[in-house]
Length: 403
Image (cartoon, rainbow, N blue to C red; front, side, top):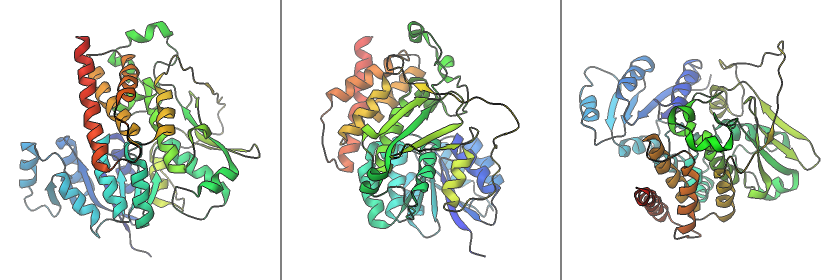
């Protein structure tokens, strides 16, 4: 018997983090929970610590007095408690972690993703912003360190699985560009269309927060559910796919698939299309990222082949989802564009969730900020973070100009 692989779950209180804990619970003996982290949800975090008994628990919000108090209340607890992102990075860089599940939402997860690949770990990547903001940087570090990047997003996991049909033996996600271009015609990302996919176009400006959060098939956090309503999530996934699989924007396509059963597809040069199907349940791609290249028995939902079911797809209407084209633009241009688009979107979504702008304003402000930023082709991490801050400030200035 090989030793259990030691896993860190970053962002354990979020929807991906909670699902990852369920996966580990069903694979005791194969994996060991070395570390979990959260930012603010201390009550839930304490319950997770009590139930799952990680060796290390880190609250990254060091400025929160409650976090400091939580750390000091360790008592006779065998679990080590710590506070601050520096403590988490120190743990990731150390020998007590083999696999990092990156489930922190937003650009806040970039620093820990970089630490994981720098130390040569397997990065089970659910934080798409790491690649959107710093894809070239992250992949270059992974290439030097030998780190594996295995996607957890259901769409990118589906593409990764479909690409195994090429007979490629390498475990890293990024394939040799020439081999991919020889065999792959395109990759097709499927999109649910979000909760407003059937609304009349003229009604979209009236969409409330509750409307945007009422997703028909997936249970997700507030920010990503709003992104689904605008299809900005798919724009970011186009950028992520571009970096993960080394394909240009012209070889990436998006289709609406309301049932959320086909998670994505790869079309090969000979016309064959390989798709990955399963009921919508994030535990499956999480488990695959942990066990790859092996497949083990899962607790996730399965297809019921005894029941009739229809699967459909149709083209994206650009008038309904203007945010999607921004993803293709960023994939084509690269440089600082990903950092700016991601930051502008995060700031705009927050304004929408505060009822300060309309849902339809999100794509408008993101396009404006992207068009007016100081573009750089080969930015450093410091430059990417500077552009991130600028884009957020620019969204605030845009909003103030409307008041």
